[in-house]
Length: 106
Image 1 (cartoon, rainbow, N blue to C red):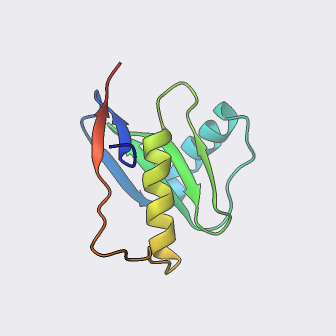
Image 2 (image 1 turned 90 degrees about the horizontal axis):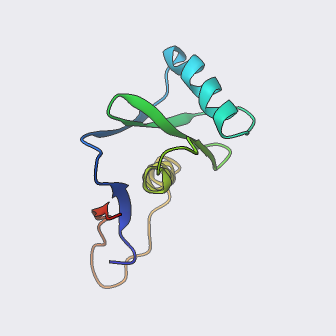
């Protein structure tokens, strides 16, 4: 289970999608929370229960995330999706590898 992406148990829905112009204010807020500069290029966002909690620039290979929420699993999902959009395919080693989501236990 050490390779499994961890999503907090309280999450009821997670959506990975391409950012739209309507997300600009949320992305600015997220960058400020993370003390990071704004992301550039094609952006993916991870929404958790309707809130944007993390974002990833496919072009820059850089993420920003809400530091007050457990977001490591969301960033992992964004990076995996970004790699697929760039055309990167994971090396196959004997079989298909699946990304598993497991709840984080306190």
